[in-house]
Image (cartoon, rainbow, N blue to C red; front, side, top):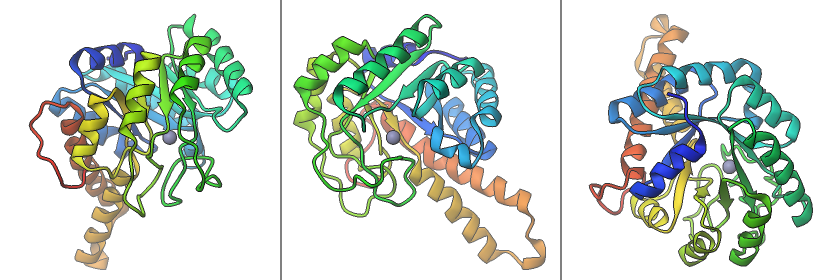
Length: 294
Ligand SMILES: [Zn+2]
């Protein structure tokens, strides 16, 4: 069933777990994520990243995401990831998205607040939740969906005191905060600032969103969830798992036996297993062991 981000994250708050948000720019990835969630009976977030409009436009993929969410036997939020403008946000809401992210984190502080206020005013009357970002999540440059990849160096971590002011003035439903994760594939080991994360959560009393959430260890996920992270954006490693499976399939099969439709089957299964693994961790049931890359 289709639910708002608010509803999904409120339940996560009660149960002290995080809901995985998965960008799904292909039919295989949507089916993989939905099947994984239904098999585990776990709530999820299906997301369309604005930068993926190059792969498949919002107008094409959006209605498919909404339809899958409505038919699902688990709560599914359909979310716009890194929306860059009120115009794009309106488009997503018109299609039936139950949640949008407006990312104006690269603007100066007052401009960020102003655009988030506009989006909140528009979305809330339509019962759509809003995520916004303070501080800048950079990109490793490998497979990330982030738009601001030029900002790889420097300190863009979220200030916990500024976060309090930001949330009070914007009334954003969820806050994407920067505390050490990066988008894409990790080239060096991430160094997460959990103390900062706890402070941001305490000051804002909002569900915190972790971007660049693939490639962390199980222990790091659990620590982040216990410190207030309720939404984890997970994409790059699942997408890579799908590609890896296709590559292995091509190497194994005879050339005469290669048909494109079989790639989609192989990719879907691989993405599904990858996603199932992290959903299990995000549920924070204390069943997973420390160590091991997720
Ligand atoms: Zn992101």
